[in-house]
Image (spheres, rainbow, N blue to C red):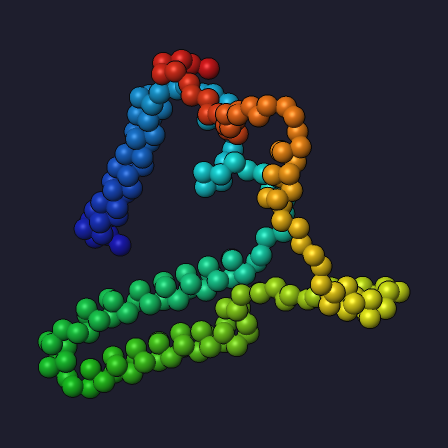
Length: 198
């Protein structure tokens, strides 16, 4: 504990942490100082992924989003440990020193991956990776209309009138002259002039 080299290593960690905190604070301060400040109702409105929010935020959320995200993070983080293992134990000096060293590391990684695979099988068998799909049920209502009435309506053939012929005959019967009108635009965008502030 009296070794000054040990204190200097902690001192290096402290200096790195202080420099990191200082850089973050300086970046935030410069952003506040330099960034333009022109608030307007559109900028101050809440949005979600570029879409205007609708309704309340207090809705039921499917917890499977969280379960699948946590399972992904768990297996992703655990598999990161394979890379240092491969770089350290893939060196030929370790294997040439003692041949049992290579077998030990291989068995160790097989056990590690086996535990991960068992966890994946457990989550899979439990059904946490299955997405809940809605079951489509045809609604049935008890009515006093006999089924034969529906069959008679469905099997009957109906005469379909040509809508163009009725429109032409209506035009011929009208004595007023035909006035062509321009189609109206359903949506007229409103553009703001550059430099105009709201």
